[in-house]
Image 1 (cartoon, rainbow, N blue to C red):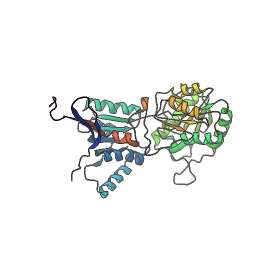
Image 2: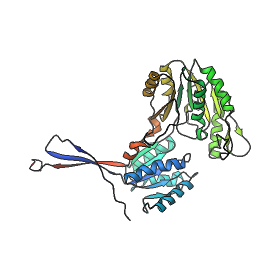
Image 3: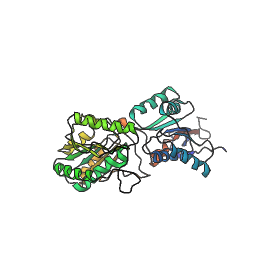
Image 4: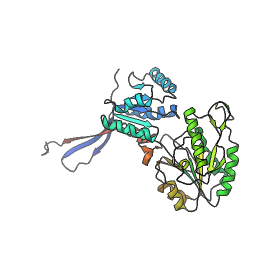
Length: 370
């Protein structure tokens, strides 16, 4: 069974000469999806659903740490009647299977979610093969700005959620928290109390709010950054140690007295480690928030609408949350600025990235252009 290519009539064009014209949006062709290990189910659908809706065929490569869900969903797609060859899953490692997708001459677009380092390699492979289109959703070091008028109790809850959700293994984690000086001391006290009450343990236990890191490599990486923070002179407010003798559990970790050039404030740790810093003015907060090579997301906590509007328009990031965090919705696209990549997930933008625009022009009858 062959898949019929979908052609979307975009719009008729108002031509300046005796010509008739319109544009089409057509499926880009074969899409290659390279998805990460931290959200294997969500990312599978966020990448494959718009490609399928656009009429594309695809190859999905899950991360080597988490291949089973993608294989299961491919089997479900087959049982649901998706034609053979439309949704294909190939397992393997990045340097082999992932590199083959990025460099293949018959793949028309590659979508990658992961580190900035690997994102560069994806772009290089696309450039040296068939100049396939690329969408990248890469690293982040997202700021959370908490202003003096914020409810301190709720702000502390948001700050912990922003860094501890999914054990901090999420690209939009609010790992840099900036608090205005008027409530800073009160916020630090409240945050420390709440962090100590955060339950870390078996993710199948309903009392647990934080499970283990994905593997030993990530576990060791996070602990090494915690040691870097201590050596660089940051103050360990709470946490900083492994939990138990089995599994890869790490205490919720908060550093104060963090300077912006410290490794814990500049590098994406991808773990439950927060860098807490102070600011005085709105202008200073904006400058500190933008002082990063990344630009994936940011959060703002304030009751002042003018402050919220000013700051949200000034921060160079693809998603801004005001008085909430992780507020994703299917119609609200997200993606990065700067070294956090380009291209968008969700919303119409996600559909459009799998469509090519074609202009069709023909002369009007008896036109001199005939």
